[in-house]
Length: 358
Ligand code: HEC
Ligand SMILES: [Cu+2]
Image 1 (cartoon, rainbow, N blue to C red):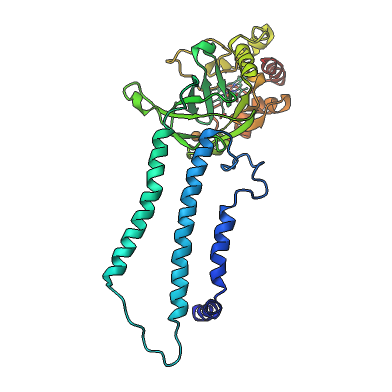
Image 2 (image 1 turned 90 degrees about the vertical axis):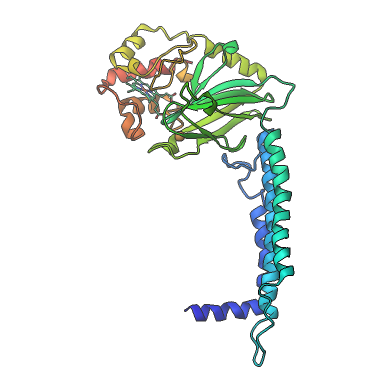
């Protein structure tokens, strides 16, 4: 079998057409306008802002150097295969093992390539460490939980808390401080920035808090995902960056910082108490006490969110009822464990109540 395929390969190689495949393969893999390039929400080449573009440029620069190395090496390889192929009566070619000139050449050449790729990479690392000066960034605390993301907005905006939806103003840099409430996660908005590991940060090691910044050029919804395997529902630990014009963003922040008009609905509150939801949730727009560790998202404006349970479900009445009926069936392993199953009536009351928290 092996012998047969070697004969097959040799027959083709000697025709030389394999040489053509090499640059062709390079062109195809380097192409960033493949079908769907602009619509795939996780396409890192559909740059959403400055950070994404800078990282993309760096990647493409490395990619083209790697392609050049590949083409040159493969060309030399196939040339040697062809030039020194076995022919009847040919003597064994002169052996160049231990040739000093070659040894020096193939030590210097890769070193040069590494230096050429390395210098701009390290330069960029330092340059991209901080958001561009000039505009004060929006600072948001990001907290990873198994399996949802929490976002805490700064005191100037009201110090409110959201889950899964990270609203940001278009054009302004966003500076995130990342920490985890449990295991190691990784924050990744593919069209906006790279991945950043998110560690548990005890008070004794505050330097473990990681940071990330990006800006968004166009209004829209940008998909995000936890990129570190963090347990059974790792894949359902998503988020959405909702980029809005500054005035819309400020109006949204204003609404989030005030209690929803329906928050004090007594029927809803009673069902919330009866269901034991208060063990893990608050419906609260005031700045959270950093020492208060809640297992579940703050539900103050849950009705206004795009999704439920870390992007598992679209946020609508039907899905919320499904979630309250049996969270474990929707997202097996979720930390939302109800003390008692809810009555059909309480589910309906809670759906009405929570969905009205806009
Ligand atoms: C043992 C803790 C716990 C209890 C009790 C609990 N929850 Fe949860 N809840 C969670 C956790 C954890 C999540 C996040 C689940 C995930 O995405 O994996 C969650 C998510 C939710 C969400 C989705 C919120 C969002 O922004 O994605 C809603 C709505 C919700 N719970 C409502 C309730 C209601 C109503 C009750 C009471 C009947 C309740 N929960 C009881 C822990 C709890
Ligand atoms: Cu995670």
